[in-house]
Length: 129
Length: 129
Image 1 (cartoon, rainbow over the protein chains, first blue to last red):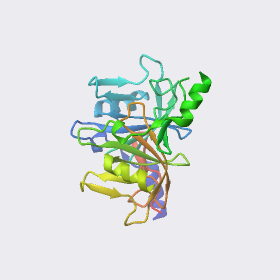
Image 2: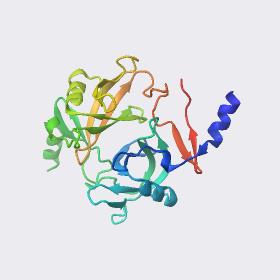
Image 3: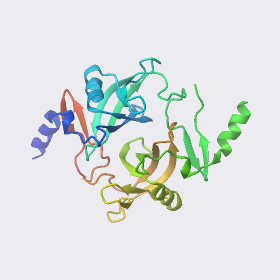
């Protein structure tokens, strides 16, 4: 039993993008996390952007506002290199372990989650680089 | 300037739930992360569940499938105690730093993100406790 489980863990089943549960818009949320553990951002992917991410090793999201592929860092150079793709139990959320080049946030901060609520007030945790 | 910024960081502005950008369903995604850095799960909140979370210090989500407040761990005991609420730059995603009691995942694993895609195969990273 333990041996069989170890075998499953080593080999696994072929990953199919179509096995994920995309929402009615064909999108799935994707959380980007640095190897350090820092959560950098959350954005959305569709099947095409995930396919491109896996094929190139550089993270591509789907821009909901522009309705187009969003190759993260294409203009800024602040790309995300995919270290590992993880899938949650419901198959409706992705966790991307990444190497982030430069700041992840468009405000020039390492993480998009840069304010915290403390004693009822919202405080800024990090300033732009 | 530096002094002023330090002052802003200390005091901040009063946090208003209504300042967040909820989607058309009145929901906002919330990522739960342990103090260790481990990303535990992603679920959804509405204004009411966030208000209850802040008031009680125990994380309450909104269950989309049951259309009701989901007091995480109410039946299992696997509650999440809120350590800190963080908000992202677009104000449309939350990061909850939590103390997780027991496993976060309904499969009895510490994290819901327990499979990874490696060499085209999906492998299981952790077994149920």
